[in-house]
Image (cartoon, rainbow, N blue to C red; front, side, top):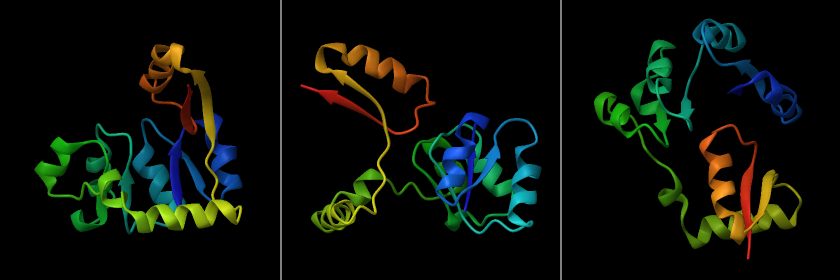
Length: 137
């Protein structure tokens, strides 16, 4: 598995068995090099150009999923399977089981009191959080 991230997150990815690749100019060639020239599937959680990157890498449209770039999804007819598709009692039970076994890693990027919800959203807007933002009532 390959993960696109800033250099600051490469160690975190590598610790989880992911091959880190820096995003930015030349990313397609870096992904080709890391993958041995073959990319089978692509999940876009960031948007703006990543569906096109997947297509440039030779990924079939039915193997591309974007959680955010709905315009590209419509244009290229790629998947948009995301949160709603996983919102079920079965998925929740599976996640609870993994958590109870210590096999689910949910990094927490920050904890904010509810009164500081605007600060929490500002952190999310930067789009560089590693983990979830938690609001404490």
